[in-house]
Image 1 (cartoon, rainbow, N blue to C red):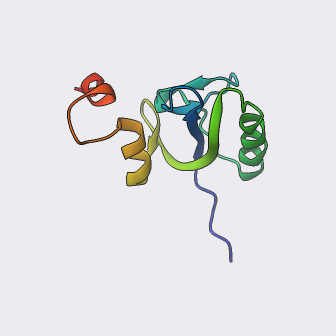
Image 2 (cartoon, rainbow, N blue to C red):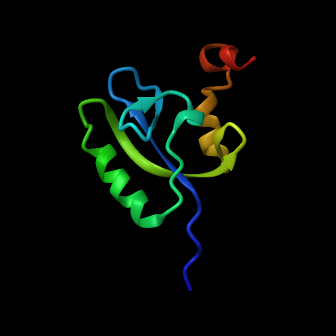
Length: 100
């Protein structure tokens, strides 16, 4: 028996900067998970992933990540995605400075 489909977002790394990016409903990339397209259908998720992977001039390593619907948009459900969203934790800089 297969597991039920959980909501997803498409994430990747920006080709030039290496930043974590998320695919939006407008077929562009954002650095904010809250602006990412929340995908709640498995077939639609596969089609959107193909759309995202076509943008190889902008991103690398696109994949579907599990999320939950939150009050301000998608929120990560796995520590890996939460870590990717906030950046390295070795010192206070970059994305972590923005969150505080």
